Length: 140
Image 1 (cartoon, rainbow, N blue to C red):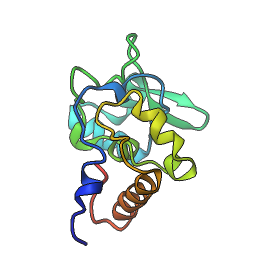
Image 2 (image 1 turned 90 degrees about the vertical axis):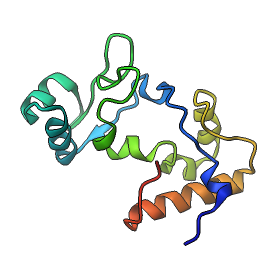
Image 3 (image 1 turned 120 degrees about the vertical axis):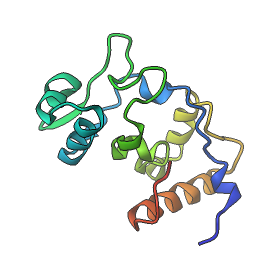
């Protein structure tokens, strides 16, 4: 599939870290925990104990006192192995449920374009999610 400049420019990360602040409930799979542990050079058990919190029966990334993800230090310190929810941002299923979610997220994310039709936003989000699911790449 050829690149689509209109979708490619829908989101351009500015590395501001705003998406890394606030409790977003970023779920971690066991694969994520192991990858993070290997990346930062500690055991998966230590990652679970020091870097995650419980959310029901799932583990989520813990927050620092300042509200940022524990892996945020002016940049994402686990960027090469960041969890699926982080890789997907802002191309998430909630936008397909209600495009108003895109506009709400864009209010705090300077990299998200809103000067485009809602139909085009939905089309681009759907396309990015399909591309991720097919193994052709990730949304970001």
